[in-house]
Image 1 (tube, rainbow, N blue to C red):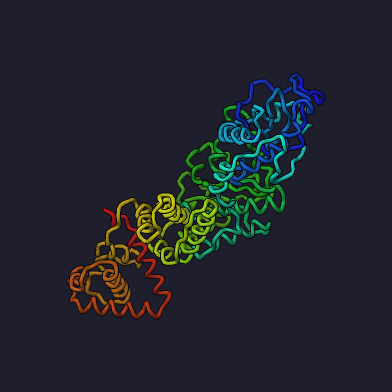
Image 2 (spheres, rainbow, N blue to C red):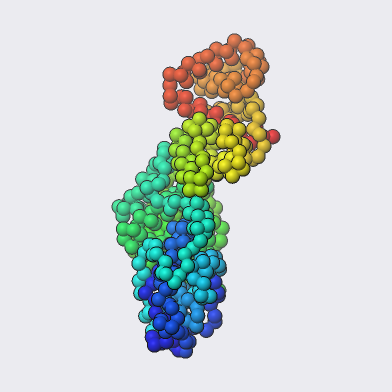
Length: 512
């Protein structure tokens, strides 16, 4: 059995990993270990601090905090570095997903051949667990006897790292202002007069960013136990593991001990009836104890068929905030922020990358897409120029737009496409746009469509006239001049038509 007399003690904790699966037997006081003086284990806490910092950068704050940060460095047992996980589920998940990365990072700074092993706390004897001591946060300079990570490894981790998602680096616009306001109130512990908050929006608009921002702020202000962030996958895996063991108490304890629970991708849980019922039992317990549950979903609860009336009513009894695709000004901010981040990272390896305002505007105008897709467009420009050794020019930006639009060069839209999208935008039909009716509700959308047809196609005035109920070319000319003058003097209308133009240009029919 392991005792305090034959176990190497570390003054470290809080982060770990495993390159070797846990053995079936528990860690007891029968195992042997070298004394500190003989094993050179005094270096291990210092080595561990360096490994910890490298892995934090490589995995990112969210994964690090969710799966790694709660592990404790315990002792060296038979040449293995022993780490304690809070549950068997946590041990299994970390070992499977991150064990090889942790061992790899460990090997870079410790050439003594030690392997890293994770065990669930309940399988480790109490007197061995008593050896755990809190570790200092942050980077610790490597001990003289420990090798530092190579410059190449550090560079690879640093250049590829993304900034941690916080509310401070979330970009706010009209499309997400309400959701951000809710998130900010929750992050400072202020009430929103609701125990269930649902953030709804298409993928890539920043729902996960908001949830992680709330988590980051609450944990910084009130401690680790104040808040729990889980993806639907994490919850489902934990529930299934518990069902297999016929004991879901670990999941129950994990979820219900937090005052604020943040669940991402709620719609995925809804496709699994058993998991959905389990989650709602936890949600009701949290709410009854005065806690708050925040859901993020791609669909509004009213459109999720799997919810029964009681479930839907419980969600609708809270607050629902809608997020939309970013408007043009916000798209410009997102693109500029991402371009600056890529430029800064490129500078670390002596590469120059600068997107001009002209090219930022081109991307913003041509890609009415999610924030995630906009960031991908900037990355595509970088890879297609700097990494390929080519000139950063308008052609490279156009190529990035083509990749985002499906790979094929976009053609000028057809007038039929312009009529279709304009009609839907103003609640009329294509037949209304082609009719002889001069009522304002039909005449103005008709003039908008004529104006855009002249702007976006190479068709002549007579050709456009024929497509709008066989009208004379002078009618089209009048409409074009009228709308041009209105746009010049009305910024609100100009933005409205820009949005409509972007929807027309983004239509998939343009690539067929």
